[in-house]
Image (cartoon, rainbow, N blue to C red):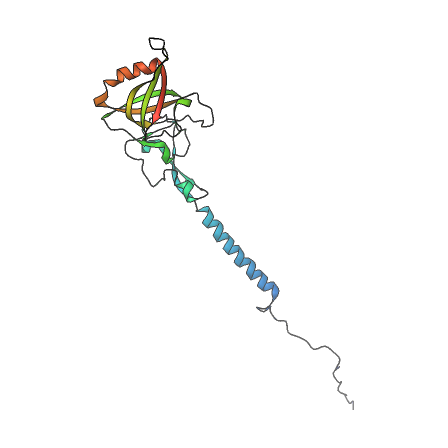
Amino acid sequence: MTTTIPTRPDVNAPHATRSRGPGWRNPRLLLGVLLVAASVVLGARLLAAADDSVGVWSVARDLPAGAAVDQGDLVRRQVRFPDSETANGYLAAGDDPPEAAILNRPVSAGELLPRAALAERTGPDLLEVPISVAADDLPATVRQGSVVDVWVTPKVPASGGSGPRAVRVLTDVVVVAVPRTSDGFAPQASRQVIVGVPVARSDDLATALGGMADGRVVIARKG
């Protein structure tokens, strides 16, 4: 008869351990969660920034000073401005051009339409008179709405040997527009000023225009 002697377990053998999934306190798992959260926040901010644009009107074609502006001359554009103050300087796409608006300077195709370039058309009781004046004889403060006097110094000296004496040919006329060239950095020897002369004073124009044709024109701003 054969006797089997049971073997004793090796007390020094390592015990089997069951693998465990990573817990919430695992540094790599926490790092991954933080990276995902940061990506979501960054993506949301980028989307918000992409939508931070303003609809404004641009000009569809070249328009000269004095041209009327209507809806057919405008094209909507989405533009991102550095701040709201800069954006407010242009006509928003949600706003229609003022009725009977005209331009006080030329604008080029594709140019954003500044609010400052729009002027109201003068009423039927005014005659618009363009005056060419040397840049040095036009105060820099003269702009649309200014009230001015127009003086002329004759080229021919008065009789008696005295020097030429300036004559005021138009009094208290309103500046309708001071058109500017498209190149604002180019020096200008002369400027054009458009003034509004009341129809009731239209008889004064013959003398005024005759004097301006033969003398040096100077514009004096009053208000």
